[in-house]
Image (cartoon, rainbow, N blue to C red; front, side):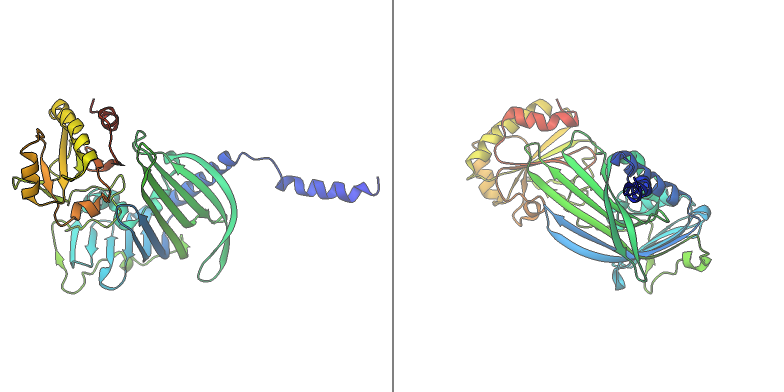
Length: 398
């Protein structure tokens, strides 16, 4: 008995640290702690950088520093991101909200105390593409958006003056449109003492119904220093226009390169058909657009176009617009189409802008745009008529 006594003491000592836990419940508890902590912030200052990588329709990678200030209880906010003349600033002093884009030296203002509504209006409901998804306000409402969580363990995150041993939680986000083939995983490094997120990696992937990955993007946020619930001078939230900047009613936005993943609008794309008519997706909001990339020499394209013509005749009055997209000259297309019964519009793409934008290297390629102007599906290779109908059904075309 004497020999077993030390071992028994050791077991009793370790029991509190070895209790069985449900990783999913425990992960949700940490998400709830984060939401509560950010919801109760009296003030904050976060400094760090965001890094984005996009592979799909376009391949890009960039890193951008940021500084964020806020007095949530007083509805004051300041966010500054970018370097040099490419600085984006959003500032609200509690009465007026200002958004300024350094690249084009313009800024816009709204006399309102509703910061979230003002930002949504400035950036046409796509603020996440400009500001990132790791904002304090996002964390406070993250819980309902999550389908599952799991604790991955502990890992240290280096700040400017120290290293913090963080809890690492992986969370899967519920898709906005469940019928679409997307997955978003967020991995959060949480300071266990303050419940502040010091690192956040958002991984988004979109696949075609056949399992082809056409978008794979990663956005990472790293905090280098932070202060919470300390006094912040009111002067921080005042906006001073840069030299030569001018006040505009609305920001002239050039949509950031996001690989055209499902979600971002495609409003700025300009389309022109063989008859000289121009189209924009902004004008087609509320309708479904199907882009068919083809060539006169492509035998599978011609077979698919026969099915597309049948679908065009069946659904053209039900909110579906089909466009053929071809890089050949208008004369080559016109000569070919004289002998064919295709009646949907054919778009010119001789400079290859649309082809590159939608990664339509292999023909045929189909891109489906939903009623909000977002990419809903992307397919390469010959599809049968019933397969085409299967792409349209989740969007209400049947």
